Image (tube, rainbow, N blue to C red; front, side, top):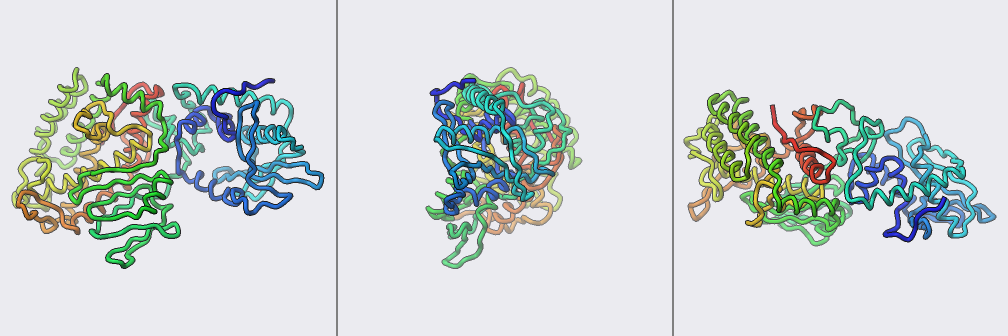
Length: 536
């Protein structure tokens, strides 16, 4: 068996092993998709010792960099043990938090076979190989045959063909491997057909949260792996960095250069907002997945995708109608919204969709005051939805909630590697994040509007949490009001509900990223169409 060589970038041995497990998994890794699921974190922790070359001894060498020029592979051996004659035994460490027994799989065999071939090219005699299962504290010898080495070389060619392809391999169908794959949260194999998901997924969600910084004059800096919060020179809090998945800065809050650098190094996004909730800017790592799909996104945005635009508007109107129905008010408005939703499903142009969306919004916000149960809407001076500047407390709260929602959308879209500015409904001509505005339409009512309604109705927000600015033209939230609304928003985002399409338990934060990845699936060709989130 002769492998192709000398073409393009060398293939990482670990990537070939992942291809043995699932070609789509290898493709996702090759385009830059990363996950922070429980087993990934466990694997990194368990490999910490083997990555520390300071623990190397003459007969027990850690972290050996290897490669094979003819095969075109590179990699790293966790540990290579040498006997007195200089012969080597390759030892691979595996964390298996989801496996009940220490079982050597085919991908593990392929990884060891490629490591052995690379060591042999470096004139190292290899006499054995084994896998050490860290969770079971058990070492299992692995015997490799000539057929294993032939298969490993064929695997390198197959991996190269997969990662150099312009489109992603199709997801596995009803395959037990998916349930324990760390990349299932970005692959979404069962969701592609847009039908209820019946398989139980055992991948754990990451235990991380979005950190909101809203106290004026606060300074956040990095020390010993923790975000230290200071106000007027005094420490007021500390947050472990590994518990953070994003940082949102509100108003006059400073981040140290060291903290910004570390957040970007870890690919943790940062968003800066004004005190009124307007998103001013964001920062993220330059390492972004799905660059090729992003090019397709811009082409599709330029030519237009009416199918996507229809779903964004139809789902928005549907959710507005459902919110009114849930509160039992204005059945006529609900009926009118359902008719407009039907028209949106069959609209033949984007301008036509905007006309339907505007008509629905007018009817929705005419009925909106009746949803407040404890607030005197007349005293709040709310008559209709107005944009910035807000002239009444309800619009000020809605503006702030929409800003919070925008930070969630930006995080989810950039996590997929898509460009927030290349949309299919909204235009990018005004330098707005068009795709974020597109995707946000279906989440305005069930997330932002619901947060504002809940905060007022349960007494978290009161009219005393607002003030009129010195110019007398705008109503703003006080610091207490901002913190109350941020707390309500976080409860909503981390709250669980049954996904209306897929039928499984999910948080609103995860639901937003799922929708962003469904847009990605339409663009990369692995999904036939897009379906918006419609609450019931």
